[in-house]
Length: 303
Image: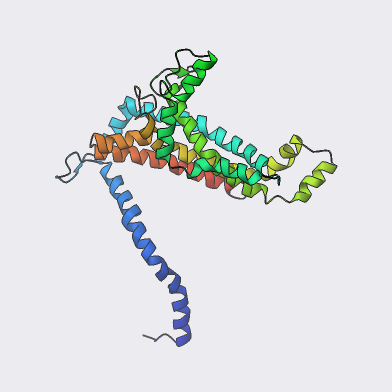
């Protein structure tokens, strides 16, 4: 067997060194992400009600149960409504805010900080605060009663009734918190994109007669397409995985009107101790998020 020459050995060492630095992080990923994911995939085909006993292989029984589970389909519907209700707002509204705060005016940094403040607030704190606002005698209902619009107030978090016969009031109330928390985060992403657009482009557009609001429609929106796609997919994935707001504010109620798929997974795993069934729900959620991620890559890939 030929011995490696010093030059070949140095070249091999240079190629292996980066991978050696990656080994600790790779080990942690395998231990905390990949191995648990493989275990969850296996458990979705088993019955694992008693953690003192090894899981029992049952094939696709959990998937058949999931197919017949009315609560699961309700949570899937709520998650879809969450997706449709939240994502368009989080794609459009932060762009408008970014355009407003992109101007170099006195005091504009204060406005940027004010819009971004909800992002750094813990969801636990935000959820509790909004729950107080939504209370029967909370600030919102007192304000509406003062105006005489709704003398009896609105059951923001305690009614399964639907707005326009489409979305439950409780779910819409939780969605408002998600939008409030996300506006500043996506505004910063758009702000980075706006500041990468040369001022010469707007000056040339002004010469051609495109000024005011029309310049944003003619220049800003087309050049911001990659950022719009990025925000759309990120916000869609976040809306699909929503949990904290539901857990803190409604616990999925009333009558499952605000229960999302992630909260249902949590409920099955930690309240009902249906570990295998929760893994099955998690597998379905993984496939949904994988589809959204593939969509993100398809949209952002060069044509």
